[in-house]
Amino acid sequence: QKVGALRELAIGESRVSLTPDSAVQLRKLGYVCFVEAGAGEAAGISDAAYRAAGVTVVADAAALVAASDVIVKVRPPTTAEVDLLSAGQTLISFFHPGQNGELLEQARSKGANVIAMDMVPRISRAQKMDALSSMANIAGYRAVIEAGNHFGRFFTGQITAAGKVPPARVLVIGAGVAGLAAIGVAVSLGAQTYAFDVRPEVAEQIESMGAEFVYLDFDGGAQQDGAATGGYAAPSTPEFREKQLAKFRELAPQMDIVITTALIPGRDAPKLWLDDMVAAMKPGSVVVDLAAERGGNCDLTVADQKVVSDNGVTVIGYTDFPSRMAAQSSALYATNIRHMLTDLTPGKDGVIVHNMEDDVIRGATVTFEGAITWPPPPPKIA
Ligand code: NAD
Picture 1 (tube, rainbow, N blue to C red):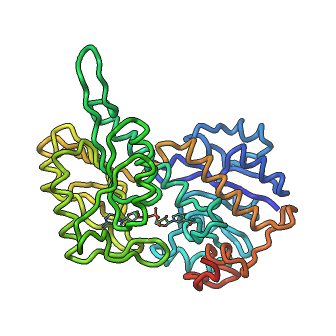
Picture 2: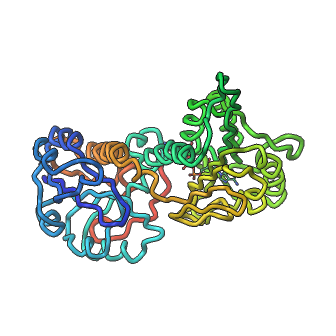
Picture 3: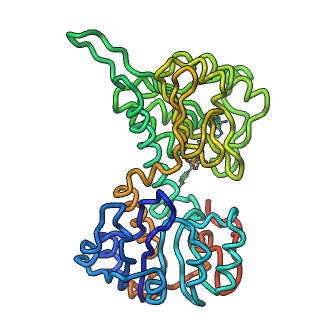
């Protein structure tokens, strides 16, 4: 069968879902690969590079979809893209079915089988295709680099002939995949790094990375008011939130860089870095808000913008961090896609076996044979 990668249409989207390397691997699975002309350009991959890897370059989206059994892309498809699909074709991309009800119905009515990369269950076996994690890892890394770009000082402390420089102080709020990546980079650049999360189980990991976990004095020392199932955070109680905010107020004047990544599944981002905390920061400090797309953790955040507060604090709300490292994110995303296809191709014969008995495939499938299959039943293994 044939796998075809569409060119991304969203403004500012530079990633691509197929790379020459992943195409070589897909060929070993028995697939013939196609790519829409120019699809890799923004990620630094020319059509010639695809051709050199044995990929056929197709002029436009309509021709690409017509030529392919499996269509892969990064962003959720547009309605025009879904319109090109026909019964029995498989689409693999981010889809966010919870936010894209109409698109889901449209895909169903077309008879296309849609696998949503954002719905891959977060179990060990599926880590290799967990694109949310691979992209969050890049976002966390890039957040620190972006902060450094707007910060006028070193991260690391130095004693030089020209004077003694203290290390930068970095606070990371939310230590999920992106937060842990940010902590790793900040520590490795030599910053004095602090991290906070409502889930106390990450404390050990944070400390083993060389950062300091910020504890709250709550109920005699316990950090959290209960982590939700599946390792995700639950909304905090008002009492806990007050303690947390009081702690942040205390830390604000000392922090040079604050990176916020706090999210709770299915909700707007909690507001954690408030106006008065920004006002208490030193001029030249930087806040990078990785939760900007979901409303932001910082009061001042404007999605896709960089704003400077009255007291000279830069607040960055970009939502395209993975795209800012498009070569890297495309390589990892294309690998996630390739692993998904590996699981879908048990015979390594270029033939999709869409096994709805498989927890991972079932969990990620949002439309199948004319039916909406989202949300999935709870997985059998945890
Ligand atoms: P996320 O992006 O949903 O949230 C980011 C972080 O924000 C989380 O650590 C969360 O606890 C934290 N947070 C929420 N509210 C907060 C608040 N008020 N103050 C401070 N922090 C707050 O998280 P994620 O990166 O998707 O990871 C969520 C969980 O899933 C983690 O436990 C992670 O280890 C787990 N996970 C498991 C797998 C796997 O097993 N394959 C893969 C990825 C993630």
